[in-house]
Length: 201
Length: 187
Image 1 (cartoon, rainbow over the protein chains, first blue to last red):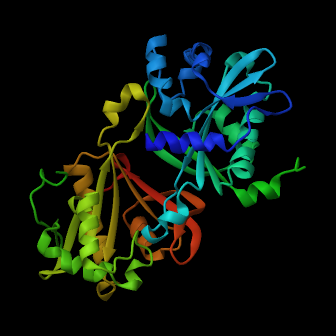
Image 2: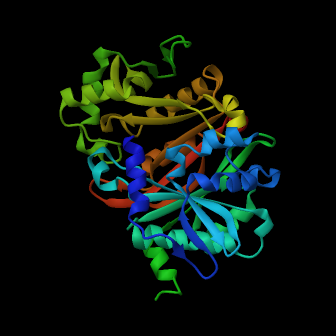
Image 3: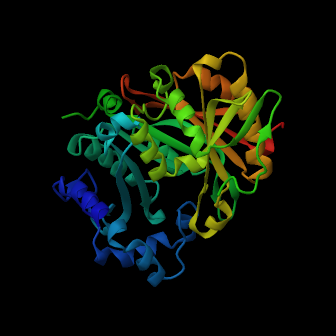
């Protein structure tokens, strides 16, 4: 319950919906679940996702839970929902004496776009806006994202929005079909993001 | 629990290694509470009683081994067996598949290769007795002595995280991660 409240507070700090050139971003609601399932149950999508769901009920049980929904954002274009984003505020590692200062200063991001809309830059447009929300609206100091090293589409998004690959962990992550694979983690600091930003108002 | 299946103590050329018992804790505290030791450690304990309470609460004492030289505790080792990251459908195959290791040696005994000797045995235990497939060690990037131990163990640097870890005196500084796969280990 405590965790739920803390996460809900994260989204409450932002005025929704947030608009980009082509997209609208807003917190997920239960009515989004059927369309999300339609996207997330496609084999090309589940290949790299943490969990593969086998039925809608299974999906709702896992992803419809309040703790999960409260860190999920919806990405929509004019025609409707095209994907979702994950925003999880977390505490980076710190020495015990500095725990309080480090608490909730970092976010982990994720994204999942409908392959029917791949190749038009939606993931990059949505993720870039998500990064801006983390730094400008939530006041975070560092943002991270992780992926299987072979998930080139996702890594390309990380790099396009200004994240740096910081680690490649060898055969550290177990894939359901491909066995032990390398993982990568990317990060960007608020100062780096500000310095690189060209569309600053 | 982690250590139950192993027969103790383990002896190396000069050292003896065994799970920490209550009687060892004053000696471990004497090392850990030194300011020069605490520089790179996760905490700087100043009260023995508070430190004991935290050890019990976090279960850290169950992951602690002590290193003895001629019957005197000169440092400690840390082993935390973890589940590897997996996709949901194969999570059983990732259970207890990896371990994080760490170490702490009294500055009075540094420079003689004791930590490399003790951690080499620790690596062997993890791979041969505990069935771990991947070992990880993390440190502040400026903790040069610890990085040297990792390299001597054959661990490979897998990443450097910019201004990622908060140090009580130095602020946000880089962290570094090393790993060793059982398949690459030349024990």
